[in-house]
Length: 384
Ligand SMILES: Cc1ncc(COP(=O)(O)O)c(C=O)c1O
View 1 (cartoon, rainbow, N blue to C red):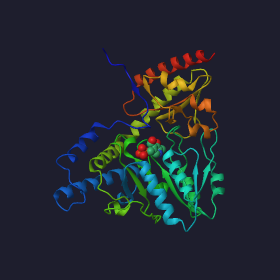
View 2: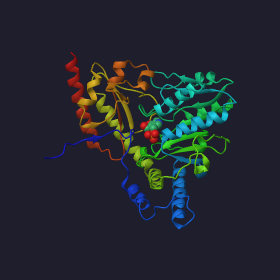
View 3: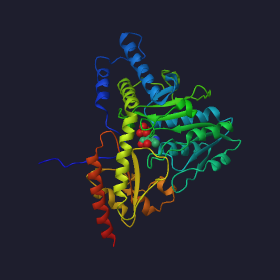
């Protein structure tokens, strides 16, 4: 019996680990197993590997290696950055500005801060997912301490003008933090030039292992955080505990590979994404979300009219694509991102996020188009 073909088109959710990354990690499980905190040859080897990775990662996002703190991923980095910053700066004010289309890693952390007395403004977006920069500027009050906005949206791929947003915030003496998780490795990022104060990202979106990420804290803007975990003083006391050396080595190698491959790979993916969109647009009632915006080259989010969206993913069982929504207690939730963009619940449920990556081929795209076209047409007849 031959295995059924399954096509992975959910690279924004996570990526397979690059074989070159696995190879690099391997010795750090076995012969190079030392604790980077130990003062002997095994420890020194591990400590050197940690710093080598920091350099590789800093090159990809153009910052100083010493501006990076390792975490277990973006979610932990978001908690450390937001709680650490708010605790340290609460005497200056208690207001934070963010947006309705942020990832849950940010929204839920901000929710926890709200429960502790902070006030959060969640900016609206237009039908394409853009925020209004004038509204952002006018939302800044004497109490505002932080603007928290992602660089690229994980569901639509929309890229916010973060450099301009940083200028607006800094002109009013407000700091800015950005979730750059989806942009890293897909578009060039120059943290020094963007002039943001904090940024957070994860290894598993760039063909590195899961469970490792980083918090960038700009030295230039003299930002300070209170630690909110305590222990052995690792990572300058901000994120104590023995570091996950193999994962960090993998993160560094993945960053190095991304640094060299990004240009050609982004061009290739943009071509494939455009082909995908052109073919899917032939389906009557298909509409691409955030189409007229500056977007990541690998991402498309497409909605289909007059179908029962709850059936869409189930019927597309040969494809790994996503609805960009969470499935909680067996009830399918419409995407909060698409709802914020004024989609109805039905439209949001009948939308797909398709994200391409380095193992996506033209054949995969053609297969996906055939599957989606057939399924959408079947669901249309089912609802007549
Ligand atoms: C934009 C964005 N922020 C945060 C996260 C959470 O990252 P992690 O799984 O590393 O905690 C993700 C991953 O889905 C993401 O896409």
